Image (cartoon, rainbow, N blue to C red; front, side):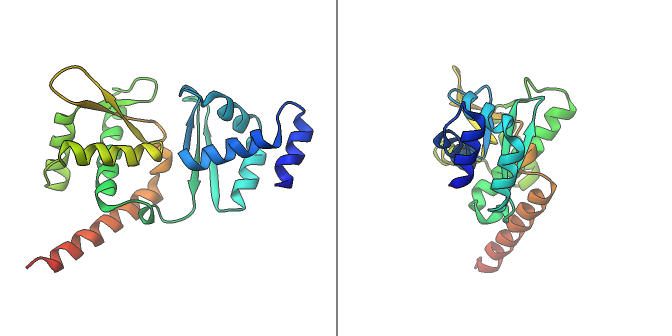
Length: 199
């Protein structure tokens, strides 16, 4: 793309493929955390040329938000968030956003991340959804999907539980107020369909 080449010429430090690679990675991962392995260079590049990335990605309907305090950048598509997630992922994302907010209010976050064990997650499922927690295999798959949105990851632990859930600070941006409303409406509509189809 000519725009990346023009930026590369102006910078004299980066090539067009550096700019393209950083943009592609941001779009693919949705959130670039400076502290993640292999993310520092694309994160620094996006931050250094933030106005240009905002302008270029804005042309394809993507907003770019930078959180300097927690050192991450996030790409937020203007499309309906519910169109990208399965219902099971939507439910989990809504629960995790609620748990993240609770941890923030209780000041129980470390470097912007909230740590949730499966007992706490199971309790939230029952209280907020009136449902049982998915089995470990399904939960792993759902967590892998949410990791692609940059909002959570699994962390293996020693002990009785197979893993902990780490809710990442980008969840606040990826699942902002508009996205939360969209996801809630999507989850409600899907639940209504389930009730209608029940014998």
